[in-house]
Image (cartoon, rainbow, N blue to C red; front, side, top):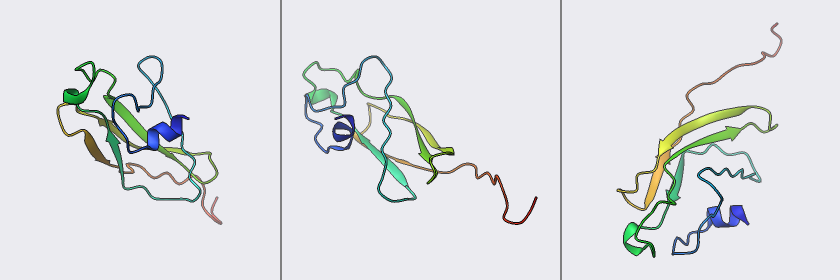
Length: 107
């Protein structure tokens, strides 16, 4: 249910990813390995919100990737969704660090 709401293109009132409290998390397992370049997030505009507010809009969020084995997590970026800008905002993902844990043939 959550993933369906997170990935849908409909941001009309009542079609959202509801969760209790001020924090939420979703993990999406993809059928193949990818190298994501960006993440696009969209929220309803204040002008069409039934309450006249967008207090349910995300503010601070981060995106991480996991290696094919599901063992190593890499932070791809930390971002701020700005409710004063466009409803649909795209954030570039950048890998800031690459760690080599083992070498083939070297000790």
